[in-house]
Image 1: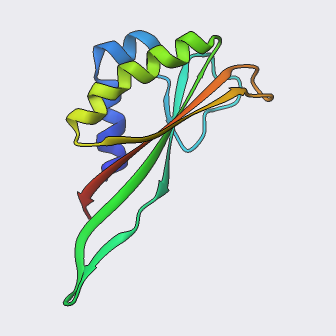
Image 2: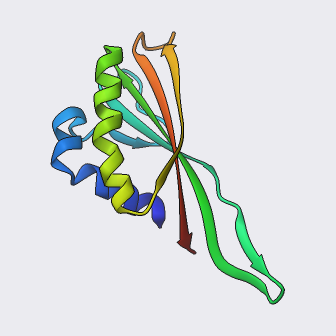
Length: 119
């Protein structure tokens, strides 16, 4: 699964783990997770088709929500994940500052990446 590949690549990168440790979660973080941490979510995964039917290719869009006690730290984590994801042939599609998350009090930066992969 591409989700596991991406999550493992991030977790095994020294720069990323120096900032978030093992706090890379899929879909949601456990309640009271200490900052900083990353929540990875698949936003969309349209399948590619040819005249002969499914090609087996998927154009996945993943959002990496970065939560941290300071805005600066969210940007540092985003900078650390960028080369890891680019090495997997992901490209950054969007970045949105979402301010402080009311439920955690942490700053929230959402960064979207796209990757084309075989199912």
